[in-house]
Image 1 (tube, rainbow, N blue to C red):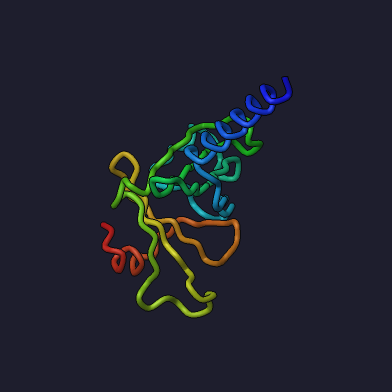
Image 2: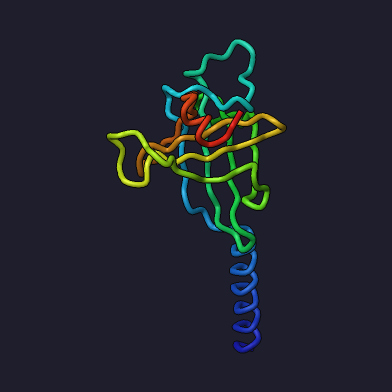
Length: 149
């Protein structure tokens, strides 16, 4: 009887590990800095101030590469307004890059950029340091160097 229970338990554990590995593992989680504008491909609800909105960006590693998940919430994170999932296979919709001549004053390998296109609208995510924040950039020099129009 104990062998049957252990065998069943072993199968449940193995199945759980398999399902978790297919879904991906959370690698990094970021929140849009309060002083940053919203991504161009997100629509703020009518009459709601930017300060009352939160955007998160999570990166999951998967067997097929990776997935970026953007979630758009009200200020209390009670109401999820929108969720956008993009896999790294959807290139060139997402690519991570650094500038050839980065601005002074940033840590090594920063700022780093992700060019993200959602429903035909392209915007650029900027990560300025190894921290849980991201920003949206309007710097024309960055857009030009990254070849985004």
